[in-house]
Length: 199
Image (tube, rainbow, N blue to C red):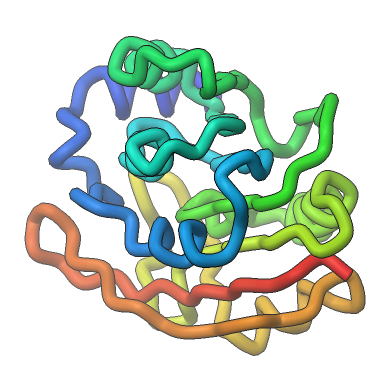
């Protein structure tokens, strides 16, 4: 099964509320609302069926993009959010070629699926190339204490120190934290979060 087919299967055959990463509300939305203007171009990496963009639409943000590898998830997103203020891009982050720049990059739970060090390095290059100077990056992934698989796939866990090192000289770190996510089945997944500004 190809990777896009794997994710289509996950989304199509599991209610969104039962997926391990499901949240009723994205806590990062508060930071976005306090940090950038409502016309800021924002991209949600691996947005899938996350409520993150829904909540930004509700807050009257007007320049939103969702990128996901699953065509099914994006079609459901389009059906759920009938707004011309959201652009939907079906692509694998590892091959994606952006056609514009953004003021905020949000990724909750994509980076840890990049298990090849070269893919990880390219991810940071892509984020730096895609963000305007002063643009914000918000990245959450499994910490060193998180699970080593997710949705039937291996993952790479990252400590806060790992993320700071990976951000390198392209970003100024604004905030870091660990966060316990409670899955719909009651499991605990520890996430490492890094917020940074493009230099």
